[in-house]
Amino acid sequence: MRLKFLFPLLFLCAFAHAQENVVQSVYFQFDKFALDAKQGQEVVDFIKKADSTRIESIEIFGYTDDRGKDAYNTKLSTQRAAEVQKRIVAAGIKSKVIVTIEGKGKIMIEDDLEPEKIPEKRSKNRRVDVVLNLRPLPKIQLPGMYTSIPKNPVIGDHIYLENLLFERGSSKLTFKAKTQLDQLAKILQKNKNLEFEVQGHVCCVPPYQNEAIDLATRKRKLSTNRAEAVYKYLIFKKIAKERMTFKGYGNKVPLGKETEYDRRVELVITKV
Image 1 (cartoon, helix red, strand yellow):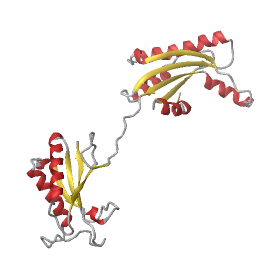
Image 2 (tube, rainbow, N blue to C red):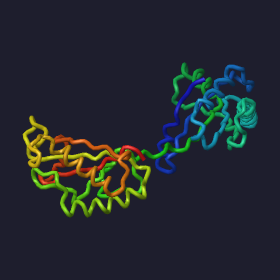
Image 3 (cartoon, rainbow, N blue to C red):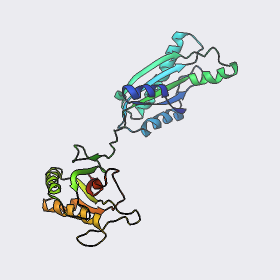
């Protein structure tokens, strides 16, 4: 028994339905359709190891080699498929998920196949393919940068407020900043499960210093003071402090725009 993937089918389905198809093959002796215990258990294990929440349907296709009459081969391939179906259902897998049980008959040998390879090819054609049609994996939403709380936030989203900027060397909130924070607070009140980190930033200091001096305190912790100012203002606006933390990042995360835009505070979602 061998595990394989139907790559052509998978390629097509990725465009049509974004569906994944995984196949397990059971091989039979010449002119036989009986399924031994080991083969049956391997098929059952193959299905049970798959993510049951993703299994949309199961299809079972039987085949024979190219020898014998068409009618006989169709019957034999159908018997092989039926035997595999019986073993699967006996193991407790619901029959309603099995949507196809079909004997496909013989698989012809290619005309240009080397004679010494024909016996091996025929042995591989005497088989049943069990096809698991899997639902697509849930779409992974990557964190992004927004100018307000997005409709479906995810952990790591950055909320960048265009007016939440500071004067050079200052951690004092401007009137424009407070106005925008007032609007943000209303949204946060409606999204009470959201938790976030308030992140402060600075510009215009040498890389080796990392942090800037707050002119009001004369201490080199300006980005932390900016983050704390926003943190305290949101508490004033009735946002529970248990939902927030604050931290200064100095000049480590520039936006790559004009330097004034690095004198900012952002909110980063930490829990949704």
